[in-house]
Amino acid sequence: MKKILATGGTGYIGSHTVIELINKGYEVEILDNLFNSKITVLDKIEEITGTRPKFYEVDMLDADKMDEIFKNGHFDAVIHFAGLKAVGESVEKPLLYYRNNIEGTLNLLDSMAKYGVNELIFSSSATVYGEQDQPDFVETMKTGGAITNPYGRTKYFIEEIVKDYVVAHPDFEATLLRYFNPIGAHESGLIGEDPNGIPNNLMPIIMRVAEGRIKQLQVYGTDYPTEDGTCRRDYIHVVDLAKGHVAALEHMKAGVNIYNLGTGKATSVKEMIAAFEKASGEKLPHEFAPRRAGDLAEMWANPAKAEKELGWKTELTVDDAMRDTINYLKHVKENN
Ligand code: WQD
Image (cartoon, rainbow, N blue to C red; front, side):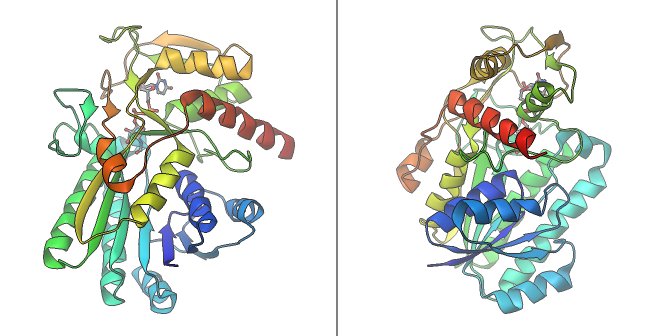
């Protein structure tokens, strides 16, 4: 079985993917600087899978340490999750985002080239599409237009860097996975979304409101041209997303291969609130607020290409994700 390096592997999506990789028999090692994750995730991965991945607490900006890891690692492939991802923070600190996300990726590609690691899966994002004429996003759409923040632009620039790298290294096998809106938690309740600092995204904020750490959810805009006036997004269960990475790893091929990872369905903010309340059995305090700059009214994945070429499609629903999120919150509460 292939040996994999997961950069950012103690993070939300990374840790769920590491679990699915280990479950499928892959040998996995993790590089993470723990900026937005906790070392205790390793204990949870071990508790869930019985395997404790080798862990390097390394910042991908440290090219020498990265090189050392590759010198001894003898990896077959890299799944590159590591990166800063707070949209709002990226607007305030663009240089931090460009240096961290882009220079870190350049260091990674240098080490992969030096040690002959020829397979890369990159954690990209639907943000690279920017505004489109239709909300059903397909991989052939032009990207890079009207991206509303530096975070999203780092994802777009890294996609372009990988494309150029492949032109120079035709045998290189690169897969770009464009995530839509990951939500939910592992069924064990041992791991879930637990960002450091103030979250941007809807679900971690809903979780904080449910925990009483935030007074109420601000619903950003109720005057969108949608059925209930709130934005609609393609919320994908993080375990489905993780399994999408395993499917991608099993279908690597030379060139740049791009896939949307989404459900193909859209859910509004009001529907998300109702789904959470149904799963929790409690009202979620919220109030209606003005629109948030940069938000699109609606977007969702056309996931046909991933289903056709990777044999992967989502199996879990928003209700499954709410159930698993609430189960995770219960575990967090019991263990703190
Ligand atoms: C979803 C909806 C908000 C918070 C971003 C990134 C994207 C990806 C997912 C990484 C929107 C509304 C939110 C709140 C709200 N990240 N909302 N009140 O903006 O679709 O995408 O996260 O890859 O790259 O751009 O996700 O969760 O921030 O917002 O009403 O307190 O929830 O307006 O309609 P988004 P989100």
